[in-house]
Length: 494
Image 1 (spheres, rainbow, N blue to C red):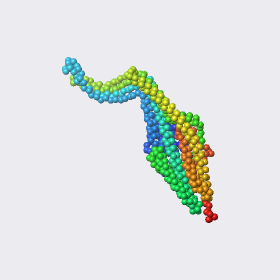
Image 2: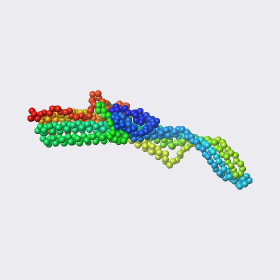
Image 3: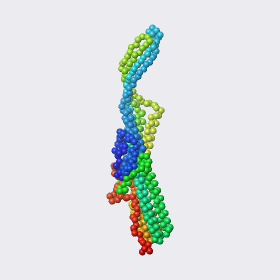
Image 4: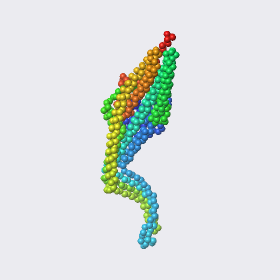
């Protein structure tokens, strides 16, 4: 389990252990570029594969981009506290007819053409809005925290998928080793039957039966080899690279197995409620709905807006009668306005009702997620305890099955037992090997799952399980110890 805490090279991984830290990191970090490929000559540890997955997996990249978007939306919301300053320049020309009395203008009008250049700067500043901007900024802040929590959740989910695929591949590798050991056992049994047939102690059906068991062992070995390659492809897919069987993992068979729980179920449930990123994201969503209600209610109140503009107006008019003067003078305008929506046909009422409904929806979603978290912790807790007992039983089963087969084969060689007893013991040994492989992998998976459902995966909090100093490592199943190397002589040799 320690290997899951040694990650940190992925985008914002390791340094982003809280929603706030994850959101801040996503806001300022430089986006990663190319997908990092796997090196088929390198033996990858679980920590290295998780780091690659955090960089490569599309779900983590999507979560990272969404966190960046929420940070940008917060910046947009904060910008409403600043005045809007705009510059404009108008270049125009107009021709107008101005009526004049005939004593002044012979035709009763004057045709005037006015070219103009008006560079202008305008300002609009919302001075007071009864809390709408504050509510929108608070809502955007809550959304940013929710995105940070969702980013952590995406990383944890990817890490859990990679860890599951890693241990599944490890299981298939150990299953392949068990199948090869079973094949050797079956060949040993077949050799013993052939020896007994040559000495007149066995019949041809016994030999054929032993050969059939050896053929079945070959079939099982080839099946295990195919499953192991498929598991390699599944692991590369979880990492986020092109699916391929060209991946080598560090099996770490010497790593000690989790041996006991470090906390009670009540402590684990409380830890999950406090630490799970999905619950943190949902809590932030509830805060965002509160702020949305505040923003909707603020529309019932007026807004006070300051407006102003300043320009340099330059004109040089000409007329078909008389003479007009040119002008180039600064001009300005200023206004303080109060905007108050008096009637809107129920728009504001419905906006408030919708915001309140979204809050109730978010609260019910939180209750559902809390129940789901509690259920998942209970399931993982029971699963780990069951896997621990199954692993202990599998170790004892493998020891007894190995001893049973060895003694049965020796007894058969001495003529005390028949081949049926040996084949039965051989099948029990093969089953015990597979049970040992399955139980060992399941224990690792349940330990990872317990960290995942309590929200502690990739984090540095107290672990849910411990490795007892007295708990030895459980290696992959090995072939049964060879029976006596000096088979008994037949009657004629005696």
